[in-house]
Length: 430
Image 1 (cartoon, rainbow, N blue to C red):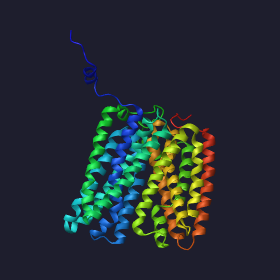
Image 2 (cartoon, rainbow, N blue to C red):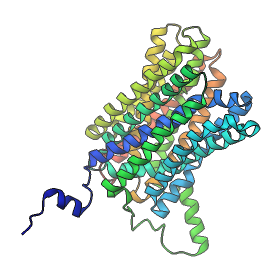
Image 3 (cartoon, rainbow, N blue to C red):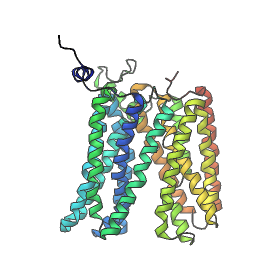
Image 4 (tube, helix red, strand yellow):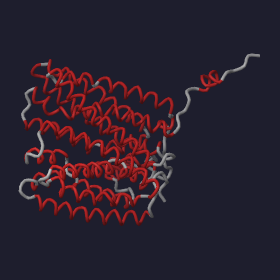
C-alpha cells in the first residue's frame, strides 16, 4: 500500500494557511509596494504637470481635486463595502487602479497637446482608487488583526507603509537625477505596482479570512424594506448618523488634532524661507519624519494593546508642541519639532485608526472609516487654511489657536476613553 507523504497531503488539502501575523505582514507588504507607487507620483506630480505645460493654478486644482476625491469619496465607498460585503474586491480594485494609472503617466509626454489632459485624468483616477480601497482595506485589517492585537497590527502595517512612503519619492528623485527626465521613474514604478497585485493574489490564497463576509445580523442594512425606508437608511449610512455617539465624538477629536497638525509643506516652506535649510535638503528632513512615523506607530500600537485607549491622550499634547518648535530660529529646535510632528502623525494614522474598529459594529467598519476620513479631511482643510493665513507674521497667534484646538481635542478624548472604559485593542466593543 502506497503511503501518503506530508507534501502530498498539503497539495490535496490546498495551500497552507498563513498565521494571523504572517497575513498582517503580507498586507503590510502590499501597502509598502503601493505606497512606493503613489507617493512617488505625488512627490513628482507638480513638476511633471508643469513639464506638460500646466500653470501653477492648474497644478493646484488638479492635485487639490485629487486629494479631495481621495477623502470625500470614502463616504460612499465605505457604505458600498459594508452593504455589498465586497471588502476584498474593492481593496483589489483600488490597488489595481494605482498599479495601472501611475506607470501610464510615462506615456503622457509623448501625446503632444493631449498629454496634460491624460496626465490629469490618470492622477484623478489613481486618487479615486485610493478612495475605493481605503475604507474596505482598513476594515479587513481590523478583522485580520483581531488575534494579533489591533494596536500592533495597525502599527506594523503603518510602519511598512511608511517604508514605501519615503522609498518611492527617493527612487523617483534618483531616476530624475540620473536621466534628467521624470517619466522614466513613473515607468519604473510598474514593478512595485505589479508586486502589490501578486502579493494580493497570494494573500487571497493563504488568508481566506479576507474574502469571508463579516455581517452583523442586527445591522439590518441588507434587509428588504420599502423604497422610502431604504433611501432613509442609505442616507443615515452615508452620513454615519446611525453610528455610535462615541465614534462621532472621537472623529471630532481626531479632526481637531488634524487641524492643528500642519502639513509638512507649511513647515518646509518656513524652513527654506527663513534660510535655515537649503531646498535640496528638504527631502532628507521629510525622510527623517517618515522614519519617525514608522517607529512611533510601532511603539504606540504596542502600548495601545497593553494599556488601552488612554495612550491616545498624548497626541493633542504633541500637536500643541509642534508650532513652538518648527517655527523657531534655531535649526536643532526646528528638527526636534519635525520629530515631534512625525511622532504625532504616526499615531494619528495608525493607532487612532485601530481605536475606530473598537467603537463601531464589525459590519459597519468600512462605513465608519469612510466617515472618519471625511471628517479628518475637513479638519485638514480648515487647518491648512489656518496655517496658510497665520504662518507669515502671526506665528504666536497660530500657536495659540492650535493650542486651544488641542485642549478641546484632549477633553473630547478624555470623555470618550472614560466612557469606553479603556478598551484594549483587539477586543470587541461592549
